[in-house]
Image (cartoon, rainbow, N blue to C red):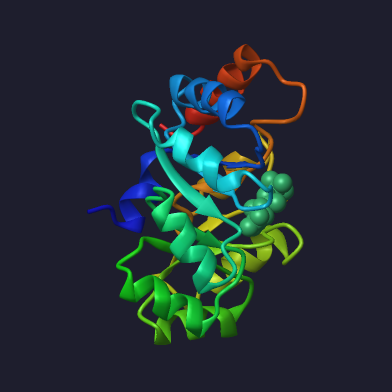
Length: 203
Ligand SMILES: O=C(O)C(=O)C[C@H](O)[C@H](O)COP(=O)(O)O
């Protein structure tokens, strides 16, 4: 069975994907995996996101999860569609308990000390730090890492290829998330090249 720590340590960057066409999604996912990024977060932000996810689970080497999971109905849909991990922009007790009862790998979003304490109460200590830049950036992350020394994060939101290295240099950071790897109009060659650069960010 997967665990969220292993998934977070698989690659330095988790591409956050907003895709609506299963066919092109497979080509995009294949390019990302070829470039070295195996962990793919498919956001449930588009009408066909679940179909996209199911199609992408068939890509050799890909570890496909669902992002933007807001409630337990979406959690079940994502797991049924083949998601190996579940990312949420925030943390509710209800969603955390549903994830735990389904034995899902769960990465909920936190933005402050109270969010983290709510997660710890629920037995969680691996979080998405979201929205990373808007919530105070590296300064905020370093401040939170003080009292919560055992907590580890995947900062996401406003991070770029240029800023990712300074986040990844933090002990509390296992990986970062970002949407910069796949933007409308990019070719699969460009996506693969962007993935390669991102995959080489941390030795
Ligand atoms: O959809 C979700 O559940 C989210 O949490 C939002 C995404 O993680 C960010 O939109 C990615 O941030 P950017 O790299 O700044 O585009």
